[in-house]
Length: 524
Image (tube, rainbow, N blue to C red; front, side, top):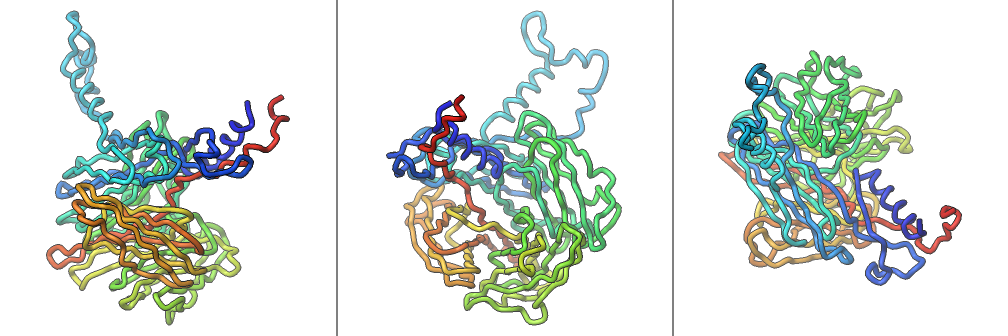
């Protein structure tokens, strides 16, 4: 094995541990803009994304969007494809029948398949057919699906489409439980997830959606933590998610305890999955609750809408130690301490909830939570309400990871899109690019300065001559760290539909160790 190959394996292995899987090819120093002997930063050449099943409502209208930004040094070939995942469900009675039905699907003497064989072949063909496939970097593509049959998606991208590949699903539900706008960014597979802010209360219908991208089954444990500690669950252990399939699990079926605020911990025993909670409310609509950032002594929850009527913080510390969280709001003018909520006490292993009211008071804001000395790890999320009593809609914002290099939000429109950016620790400069539209338009770019300790709702660029939706890509230029979220909003029947998605780093680049290092000892 040569030295270059060893270095590349080290870089790819480090990234795979974070994103599920990734690959890079041998570096060309000139193409990468790096001198030989120096560490090179190269585009990822293979990655994957998983999208949960959008809705069980017959009134749902879903838009899937896929996009890859133009990346310097990326390969000139490749694909990015999202396909339907199989939905786990009870088998058809005819498939379990004995006797003549056992012969269904066999080949006749004339070489023709029986009726069941034809159906199975058609089902397999439909599952393998691309739902969404990119044609070129820099231009998003969309697909639409109506009703409860919209599938979960499993996707891979390689070559020129892998670096920064992003996908999003946005669903509008006209009526019923969960009515409103629901959005979630498709995510990479992993082996552990935290979801503070879920519920098993009678007024809520919360599902944990598990999607397995691999060719072997995954085995998953689901732990629930309420206000007094871990809840007793009946069937939360050893849940099997079949290969390349999706499994929605109703949280209220896992325990007899009804609690308003619950923290969900998903632990994968074998394999890996994508996971997201769909939280639906009888009165205030609903949205997706993405996983919180990993437990940490410092958390940022970016982009609380300035017209939020109510903000409810749900937090949990996994250990046995109690902690007093310091709470600050990063507003346009700087960091401030909310009156009456200067510190919040968390008991170890117990979920705590705090009503913060109309926290933002008409200004952009992000929550910054800090444990003393950062010594006690915490996960957190907020539930946000907009609108007047009787016509309210809800959304969730979990603690987010910073944008280290680049992040993208999809399915934006000329009106109703808000990009919120915060730099809680130091000033930062960012570049924001509006892509071409799905049906036409010319990309536009602007740069912005974000002052230290502030949150800014920036006037994001819009493609010239826009037709359709478009992508907004945020790149860090200097300073930081930077956190961001994007809000989509519309009004239907006097109800302010909205959904908020934090923007995680797209992890589209990988640092490859110095290829000139002498590793000859490893070649023996």
